[in-house]
Structure formats: structure tokens, C-alpha cells
Length: 51
Image (cartoon, rainbow, N blue to C red; front, side, top):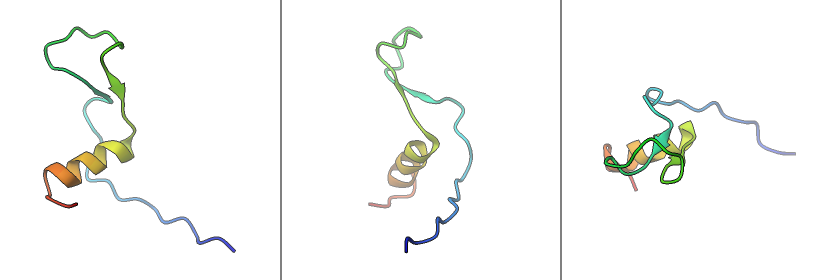
């Protein structure tokens, strides 16, 4: 039997769902669409210092 799914707790929703160079235009060629889970992972690593 599989483990029950745990609800995720996210600090806050991101202002944007795209990640890319700051000086590029708004084209989708140089951007990566991120999920909320990916955004939260980067926040925890960079801002909170987790590994």
C-alpha cells in the first residue's frame, strides 16, 4: 500500500512563473517555466541556506 500524499506548505506564490536572463526581451526562447515546487526549492536553497 502506498503512503498517503502529504500537503505541501509553500511560503508564498511567486510573482512570475518564468526564470531567465534579466536583460533579455520577454520571448519564451530564453526563459524556463517553473512550477511552484521548483520556485520553493530555489527559495529554500538560496534564501534559507538549506541543502
